[in-house]
Structure formats: structure tokens, C-alpha cells
Length: 430
Ligand SMILES: [Mn+2]
Image (cartoon, rainbow, N blue to C red):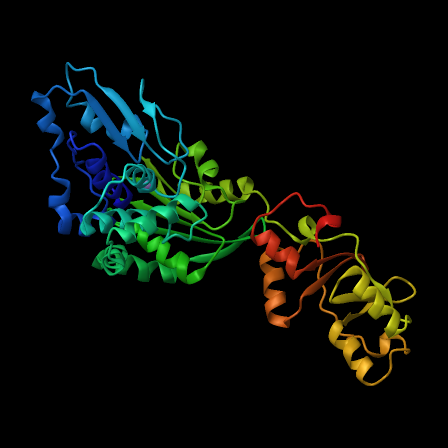
């Protein structure tokens, strides 16, 4: 049971008042603080309490994997209950005969909150706080790419119901355990930045004497600080020869759900983990690195997104003509070429203004263009393009191939790429 599970459950209790909540043996370390404070709002039965009972209807939240709910099913005999599952994970359900009622929203709590909203249910402020914590936890405080408008609507409704953001924050604040801080400090010394298929990836390998709860939060802290495209943290617990890989990604091209599928891992595109028993840690790590090298989809580079039909002007064109042309093609800057097609400069609106103020609109543009042109090559990754834009405060990056202008990447192209809009042809780009 993690925070999203508890958030879902507190709403299930309101939606199905004739049902009882059953607790799991396993409470996720991130959820234990909230659970300790609000235990009475759940009023849980234990799975063992089911043994004497006839069960008519089972509601499962935040998972649709039989493995994850077997502790409950092993306590149910002799009844043939209906099963309804509310789950937001992109996994196929392996619980036979269940009705699937979830939505692929950022948090499972959102599914339950939307139902509660529709039914006009009123929450106590404590319940709203529990539910909002669940939504914030699973959506990275409403900023992960899994966020849908429904998550925001549910969050807004929970605020109306009196959820306390101060309390939500206090339940989310990570790294409360000493063990977590120690691992954080060790990882910060160990992490290796590496370029794999053009992605800026962090890797670490750490052996532990025993499992430490809350490692995923430590990995997320490092993700926040270092801001890599993805982080793969490999832990090896010597005591039980268990490998744990905790991974986070910020890019759709690094789809962890797909990447971990051959290892039998699940999880989300952007957050996933693996647990493999009976391993040799260092051997696994070596093989895992080789697997990443061969399996990561190459990073997007300038070649993939640049505009190939570049509007350019000749260096002996008059500033006035260049100015008219710039207006016609609706650009704020243009590459300048010599007679042989070689890139020799870049002319911006600002250069044109300068010529205008000096009444020099008739002179060749080469007198006013800037000659130090920042350019790059088709294989430059978007990370590097971003750095070039920021470092040089430029809005256009000409891309050269074999000394000739092959394309241009503008701020617009870059922002569209960041928004992940694909499939626009060069002609539609502006
Ligand atoms: Mn969830």
C-alpha cells in the first residue's frame, strides 16, 4: 500500500459505505507516516478477518496483478465474489473474471475522486488531505507526463473539500530515515554520468548489507538534483543475493516499461523498478549496462527535427532586399551564404535596424551581418542544442553537413520537440 493506494481506499470507503477496507501486510515506506497519523480513517480489517466471512464483492485498487493481491485471496474460501478493479497502470490484468473500471490517469486516486465528485460525495478535510497526497505522490506533484486534466480536476475538488497542502507536503517530504540519507550520500559519490545512444544517463551500482526501505525516494532526490535524461540505480543486497534496479526517466524515448519487460518488470514509462533474486551483483551490472547500450532508442538529434528547406540570403544582397525577404518569410534571422553556398554569417532583425538607423539599407548585407555564426552538425543531440541556445542566447542554430547548410533548428523547433509534437512537415513549421 503506497500513498496512491491509501488515497484510493479512503475514497472507496465513501463510495461503497457497505464495504470494508482490508489492509495489506506491506505498507510502502513513503506511506507509513500518513498511515500512522490517519489510521482511524481507514478502519482496516486484516486479511485473516475474512476467514469466517462470506465475501460478495471485492474491490481492488491501484493494481490488477494477481501476485500483488494473493495475500487477500488466500484468506477467502467458499464464496464466489464479484471482483471490480480500479487500476491506472498500463498492465494487462491477470485476475480472472474481474471487471476493469480504471482509467489511465496519473493517480488511481483520481479515478475514485472523479466518481465521488459525480456522486456529490462530501469529504472530511482529513479524507481530502489523504486523497490529495495520493494524487501528488503518483504525479510528481502534478508535473509528471502521466498527468491528465482529470488529475488536476480531482486535486481542485479535494482542495474545495478542505485538503491541507501543508499536510500533503509534510507527508510527501522524502528521506525521513537515516538509512536513506546515508544511501543518498553514498550514491552522490558513486553516480556515473554516461552518454548512451546520445542520452545523458546516470548510473550507479551500490552493494548493501540489507534492504533499506525508501530507496526509490533517494533515487528521485538525485533525479531532481542532477536532472539527467534517466537514472538507473542498481542495488545489490548481499544477504539475499537480490538485485534491485530503480529507474526514472524524463524522456519518452527512454520507455522504462518497455525496457524492463524482458526482465519481467512492470511499472510506468517514466518510473519503474526490477527485483531479481539469486543474482551475482557485479555480473548483473555488467550485463545490464550492455543491455542498455543495445536497447536504448537513440536520442533525438538535430537531423530529426531541423527544417531542411532553409531560407537563406546571399552576402552581397542589399540590406533592404534582405529586410523585405525576412518580412516575406516571416523570420527574425537568416543565414547568409557566399557565392559558393558556404555559410559566412547570420543576419538578424537587429542588424537590419542598425543599418536602417545609419541609412545604409543599400549596402551589401555582409557589412551588417554577424560573422561569428554559432553552428552545429546534424548529429547534435537536443540536450546539446538546448545548451547552445542558452549559452549563446541565439534563436537559430544552422546545421552544417560537409561544410554546407543542411538545415536550421530554431527555438520554435526546439520547443515543439520538448512538447513532443511530432509529424509536422518542414513547410508547416511556422
Ligand atoms: Mn498508483
